Structures are given as structure tokens and as C-alpha cells.
Length: 145
Image (cartoon, rainbow, N blue to C red; front, top):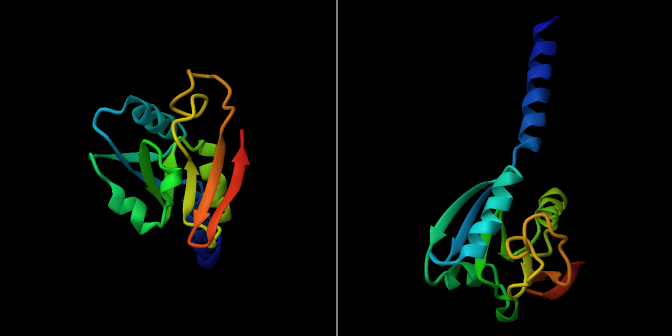
């Protein structure tokens, strides 16, 4: 095998690995919130690294991404340049990171929906809530459960 073929094969292998590697999540939450801990565990089970920041006020993070107050939830996460507010399912985050839309700042599952990841009992179906995308130009439905 020629050296250039070996280098190409190595480069292709490394590129494939980097596509498969999951992004790291910076999670901002209250030290006492249990459902946030559950959401983090779900994300870790899906292969993400979750770095937890216990804080009582992380409004600066929300403001940096222009998150509208009506979308607030119990925790915020930053992943690859997007803000994830609340109990957004991993499948929506994976889609966001795959598609990388440049016209939104993030996704939110407003409030604390009882049938959302981290709130639903383990293995239960996600239902009865909406995931909203947001940006400086407004809000839009991302997915309805």
C-alpha cells in the first residue's frame, strides 16, 4: 500500500471518528434540582459528556443566547454554540447538531413538562409538550410531543 493511500485511510478514519463523537454539554442548574440531574443522566447515557455547574443564578448564560423569558425552565445547557433550555429530548438535540441551523440560538422545552426527559418516569413515552426554537427574530415550533 502506498504511503498516500495509508495517509488517506487514516484521515478518513479520524474524520469518521470525529463525526461519531458526541459534543460536550455545559449544564447550569440549581444544586438542589433532581430532575436536572435526571436529564443529565439521560444525556450521559446517550454518549455526551455533561459538565455540571451548580449555581443559583445563570441568567447571564440565558441572556448571552437571547433566550426569551417565557421559555424559561429549571436548567440551561450549552452545547456546540446552542442553548438548550429545560427538558429537551436528546433526539431533538442530535437533530440540531446534525443540521446546524444558523438561524436559531437554541431549543427550549418551557416550564417543567411532566412527560419530558428527566421528568417522566424511566422508559415512559415523552408526550404533551412542545420544543420551541428561538432566535433574535422570534420563536418557532421545533417539535410537538
